[in-house]
Length: 435
Image 1 (spheres, rainbow, N blue to C red):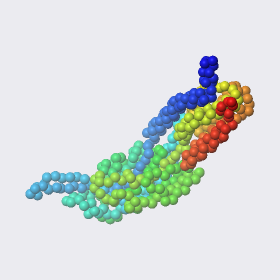
Image 2 (image 1 turned 90 degrees about the vertical axis):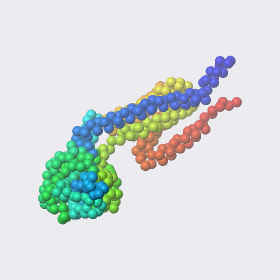
Image 3 (image 1 turned 180 degrees about the vertical axis):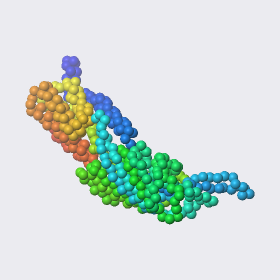
Image 4 (image 1 turned 90 degrees about the horizontal axis):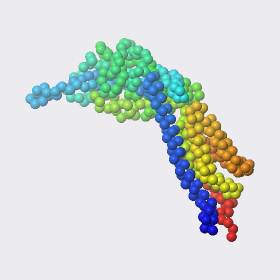
């Protein structure tokens, strides 16, 4: 009699719910393993991108031109004896800077991974006013005007594809590789301009042709700086500290224009040595590839425990209504089918894109679970209900994944609706036998 009572207790639905709940929690472990797998694929994708960028050219940041004038400060000690000479460089930014940029992008592939690279053409022109050294406030400084030079910062020198020539007031100056000082830029080009009259306004122009990848940026160094960029790439992202004043993005490409003054930055037009950093005054455009299947796959895995719990509840209700016992091992097989969905989604997404991969994976898993339910219950009506509920869950998840700004709101409303349906369905079940 005692053995029969124990058996009845073990076969009760209360115990079954406890076992199934524990099983659902244990299945969180393989879901975390799948998340780690997706992260590894994301890391591998970034590694391949960096390798391709290293061969073509990295993200490019162009700054300048800047006029640089070496100086020497003589410091005297006691009794006017000379004790020290300090050498430095005074930097003068342009009065006006106008940059016209055109990007010619193309996609490169390595295996299943795809990146976007570009050839960029930058035409820079503007003017310098005569340098006013009084604003530098350096006592006893001697300026070597004959050694003045211009520098232009280029973040990745490997990408320079032409032999640029700096034209100042109609006079051409050759360009030398590297920067004569690293006060402002770590890499770039230098133009020595001896002899040149620095007591009159200087009008300049130069053209750069650069290979780069993903992003092209320009530093706003003029008292007034104007930048225009255009390309036939249809997925731009405008980056940096300043947004375009006007832009037009269509399926045929984009155009964008910026206008920035020196009042929009936190550094002046002249200073000595390394006193200020110009890198904050940057703007540009990033060429995006709309490949977000890894991010969406990672987001979808976060709903794995919810999918498992809801499917277990559905099967529990089916078990109660159909008066057919379902073994915990069979629950486990259904849960593993749900987890395989995420592995299929990630692997197929790399090949055919997220949306089609989602359709194929959801269809395959739903068909597998429906077939398994039919082999267990042999009732077409229950199989239809399970199939419809499974389809509804995958459609709901797909809708949430497509939403960016309203994903949390849609998910919360969906969970509330699901809970309402479950509570209503539980009212139709007699949880205790009638006395």
